[in-house]
Image (cartoon, rainbow, N blue to C red; front, side, top):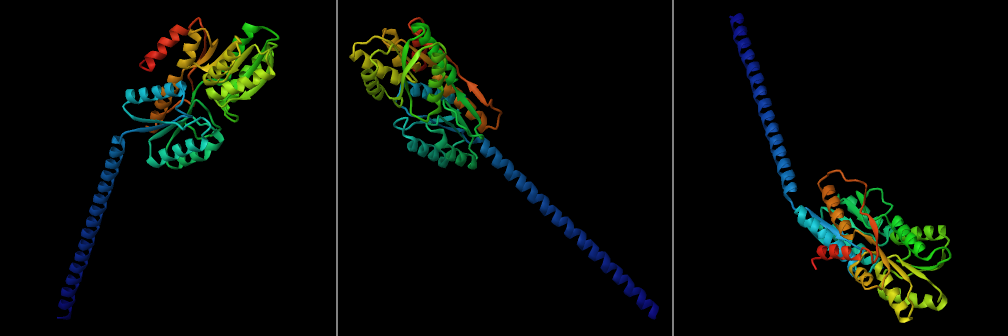
Length: 343
């Protein structure tokens, strides 16, 4: 009897153990099913998020030094043309003047706050702009520098003119016209702006090599009115000046006004290739300008920014080129510019 009871109890215990194992297996399978379901849900959500992000329109913020000159208006035209060709949103902004550094920085910060896909910036004062570029990096917004470079390692690319070589072209043009011993003054953009440093330094190198005398170098902050005032003051001290090199066309045209008022006909060379400068050259007033491809600076700047926003590779430096425009080739250049600006 005892043996029979033990056998029955043993059977019950075995069945109980089997039931426990079976319950455990069912539980494990249920947990695995739940985990797999969560994983699939997370993968699905992640895929949806990526798809949603990919479908969001690309927005490029372009901030230039100012929008008060033909040069920057042409850069703006190039940027907007690239936006149209690439099917992306492009907003072009610029402060009231090239010296309005704080205003420009505020504009960059505003674009970061808006969460643009990428930035294309021509910094007026590169050193002052680096902290705000760091803010863009922290927000995951790539930055392309256009027209003016900056010593910032995290830039995607620099798109712009070889300014030093452009300055050398101006120096060579003046040296060829005047010869050794010629007397030259230089009007330059705001002190501390590396673009104008490079342009003036390139001209200085060639003029000194060729044996010309540099009478004076004065800042006129890239403004036509100030260029006129500064030139008037220079004429009081150096009435024997034979040529002027201005590191942008606005200053060159201002200097030209001062010279015309003083009844002086001398060589005046600007830099940019702006519509007003080309008209002046055609009319036999301004002698020449070092033409940048300002349209291409805006266009290629946006192209690089869009590539960066998509995570595509971008060349670290994109040179948009320069050439001397004088009476010999001004008509052809004017036709090109009128087509660009839709005039």
